[in-house]
Image (cartoon, rainbow, N blue to C red):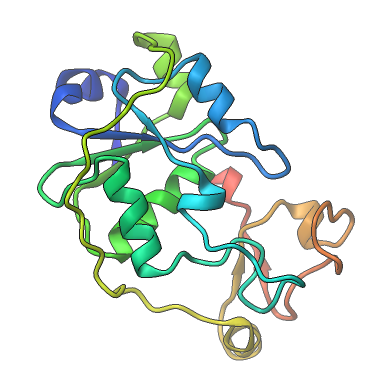
Amino acid sequence: MSLIPVPRLREVLDDVTVLDVRWQLGRSDGREQYLAGHVPGAVFVDLETDLADPPSDPVDDRGRHPLPGTDRFADAMRRCGVSVDRPVVVYDDWGGLAATRAWWLLRHHGHLDVSVLDGGWAAWTADGDVATGEQVASPGDFTAGPGHLRLVDAAGAARVGRDGVLVDARAPERFRGETEPLDPVAGHVPGAVNVPATTHL
């Protein structure tokens, strides 16, 4: 993953597309937070609608935040001003968890010049100007490829857990089944190992 520090982003701010991906599990106030303050020029990206397809009811093996279809994702990114020949910087306020989803999806669909703001929103507010209100982007020309990174479904994850190394990046208490705020069944896929994302971002 490519990180960009605050001083470097400040230098290149006019030459990049900045995406604000503030989102936290169980909260839906990312847009309100964005409107109250964001990196100048940043456009808000909603993880629930721009970086995921709607979940089925009941939730199926694609999960609660299924990967967005190629066309849905490309449309969302173009609305946000993403173009193939312009670098993209993404940030959030939750240890990079939402920003890295945007980073991964853009890379998966063929945009190779994507960085995550090192330290996220907290780092920017400690050392940068803050804009308020809605930033309306000029439409971009991003065309999403079919996705070049390998994906695994629920059955495949079970096989990996049995025959390989399956990493569960959730919080340890969710992995252990001690708490489960969202899913009907607590715990983890048999054979998975817990490497919490928050300890690495």
